[in-house]
Image (cartoon, rainbow, N blue to C red; front, side):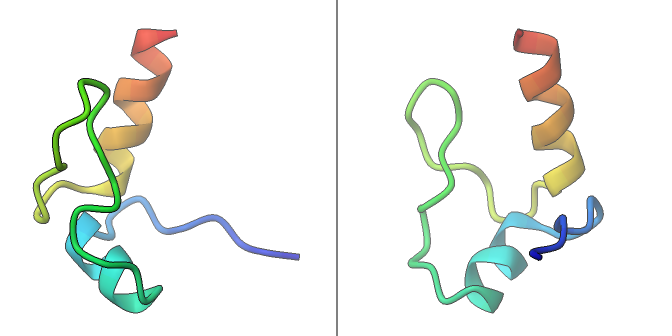
Length: 50
């Protein structure tokens, strides 16, 4: 069973830890997400947009 990613982890750290190329995680408008943005912030934005 996979675990949920910590909310205080940054996008850059997450991409590096999982072996993803930089720029894999995108904003809702299609642009790259900043590498110092936290995963928890992305989750809050996703809930707010629904």
